[in-house]
Length: 227
Image (tube, rainbow, N blue to C red; front, side, top):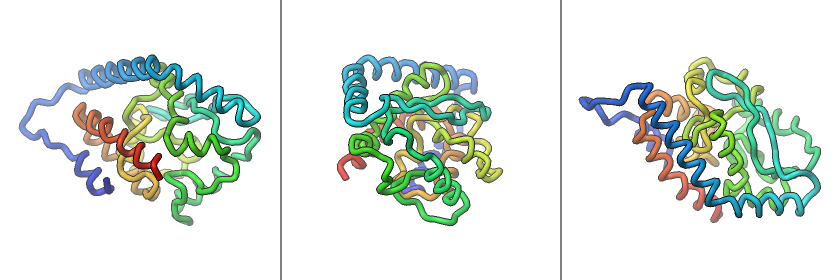
């Protein structure tokens, strides 16, 4: 789905209809978040254990990757993922790349905020990234109330300082495991396009849009994993 199509999905189609109150909508979204996170964690428990062991046995280091991200109201939290890089990888390589992307000095390579052919990524890690299995541990962040299933991409503190002022609304809601950026060809998006989709989602956020993005996420992940 192109960015134009994604923004059309985000555009409101409920003129003349009653909308749930913000408080009611937030309660419904939180309820869905908890229901989905608990259900997936229960059903995928054997897969999570298997992936953890695969990561630990395939390269030196632990199975988890922890990183500080920025959430709602610009509050920092520790986000969890499966480790996809070699132990003691230099984070400065990626930080410099992201900074240059935000400043428009380079074009996106291996996906939104990701380097293509990153030498720090293990063979198992490359598979986990391609299939988005590395993001399963973020369901624990959802349970803790730090993330939502659907929302803006959780950014790094160093990225936030480079964002333009018009991107501020993206911090009004919890960041998500998936979002408009995920189902809109995230491997081909520029930084500005990704930020605009985040802002569009916040501006037009409804339960219907939440569900539409959720339903479009699996096909997007399968398409990316088949490449």
